[in-house]
Image (cartoon, rainbow, N blue to C red; front, side):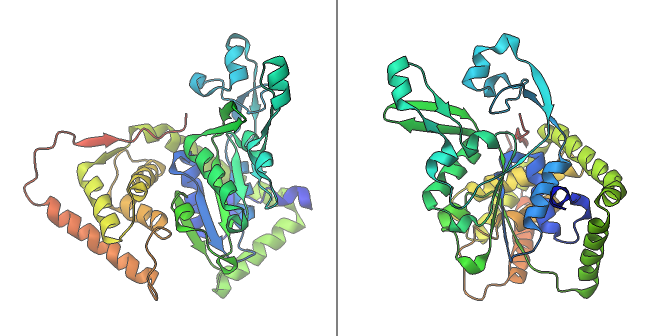
Length: 363
């Protein structure tokens, strides 16, 4: 049974629309910065992560490279691939889910340098860690709130830079580590520090399904799947292929998506009204809105894309007030949108740049 467990089809997951949307957007544009999924146990979090990996198309990798370097990305190659740039052999490889165990030590995560070898032989000997395996894959971190804060910091740094830097006693080493970060946590087991929360691009809160009809559909599909996994996968193959093609189309379209000054003003206004600290929210909202537009096959960001992005980008960044309800938040976003549309109706200053391109496609 276990071997089939990992490939329950993404398109067959019932409900949890926000979670599925956040995962797809990160698959199209990993520069969004990952997603934190908050929810109770048994809400299809790890099923969704595995299903996403299975959904994404195979990638071209350098054969024999521990980092699975992209042969087309000459700038992003590891040191070893750079040395042999003329003779790189390539192969196709499926996307993988790399899991980070809660007990992982820093060396296990970042990898280790053999200092003695470096001193004696004058060359660096690197023992790869989880961040090496995660390059160009999905890094799945269950119960991220129970991890050591320092390790979470290291993960988030690598996710933001697409590189892992390791330094031991004056010897340093760097390698590519660009991955789709999926973190999960059960809020009943303690929160993440706000500084760490802010660094996850998107956040979704999922609940158990309380609608009987939908719950029955979950059970029905699961029963059918367990009775005959191959037949079930066959039944969903077409939906999976359509979704896969849609992701690829969106990745190609993304570099052409433009965000007008009016939309940027709207994003800034929403972030000001929602009392969000720093500028990470504005930037992530712009990237997310552009990715949503690309997913829908459009080359310019509209009001609905901004509204959609706000729902995914702001929930974990707002200063928490007691008894604040998500409903109120949605009304507030709508008011901010009206406000920014009202102000843009005033005679505007001469615009030097009417559009801003978001060059956030995956290299």
